[in-house]
Length: 600
Image 1: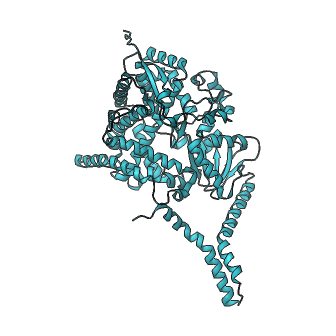
Image 2: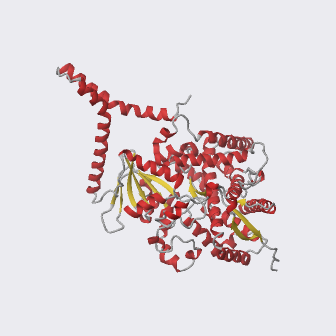
Image 3: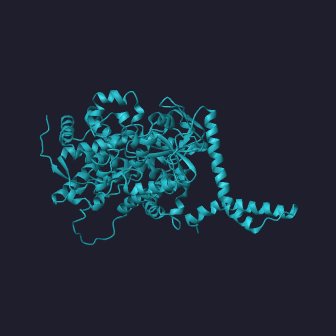
């Protein structure tokens, strides 16, 4: 039976905690035995008790001195450090409280305003070097890629959820996963658009059904189900049919007792729960077991997730073996691109490389989280913004109707023509980045050149480097004085050439460098396809405030304490786990568009 996580964590710490007092006792024994020097008990007892904090203090102080010396030897300095309590407990408390009450990224953005966009936070006696500087993100993600990795903290925090999949792995294991997955996303396939169409029209049918009943609906929940069903069929060849379970009603509508939700709905809820718990571990790092002492809170939802995925994967493996088709020889980790067949699922593609069900599950789960949640987040915030910008909605619909018409499905060629549609998506990705935070760890010492004319910054090896594209995307010095306004025109007019063109690393919704999102084009196509189909059928979108549950309503303090200018314009509470979402959902009503005749 596995030890509780807190017990296991403390047991791993125990040798280091006991070593100093044991060492003190050994010194006393040597003095007593060989030198006949007998230390009084009133001296020896406190020395044993204080030996660990004394040794820890010496080690911490030595590490800080050694880092400053190494920085000076390179003509550099360490990034400015935040003042904090012993062990950074005040920073941990503020970070965890911020996840519950504050706006995502608000706390670090306030610190960046005071200390600069690169600074150090000492948490559990270790430095974390936060940055939202595009020049440094270029170094981290691209130009010095080999000097950074996801790091052990990422695996400790997210390992129960993501396993050994592509998002948490490093080195040869990451290369193996990346090489297996890359061919699947290399080109557009007709079958992808057929899949988008079926699931988009299915979702629109459920929207109309709920609206015809006289009720608003939760767009965030609906689009998560759409993305879940579409990604399930795309990745697994298995439609989860989460839309078929029916859209939820507003919290104020009394409903009769129902039977247990279907397994696909439980799977989606479990995936949300596992992400939320994993994200709450972020500020704690490797010390998260102290706050989940007796049980790993991710394991319960992961049981539901495995119960859903494992039979599907086992069936795919059995079918593959029965076919007699042999996979590639990947001895020694050599993986070669293969032609992905039309209509082939990701599981069918991966079975050419491995039949290991754990590897398959981890990879599918990694891609599922990315495929479902990022698309759902993007589309949710597009609709959220369109409810407050009717002129943008009208212009977007006009472009869709002029390019595609009111009935037929769009094609990749259509998307290339619809510049305003892409601008709407990009502006939403900028202001509401689906993945607002990320982290790397240095594998070697790194020098970050100064961006202000001063000395460069020095990052020691094995340093944690959290970063936020959400904070970077909202910087007025990078995007102009109107950076906090949602305005798709900035990706079309002169601001594009003034800000983004000369400095493309100020816009990183899909990461960059060797770890750039493989599904970037797929995500654009899926989101674009759904928006086109939705706005072919509906001409007006409005929030339904009466349907919003109390948890989603913006607290009065947001308008009163808005030092950054981020919160006062929000009408709903924005939160994050691995991806950005709206607490309590996005409840809206829509006006069905009148039928329009297609031009001959």
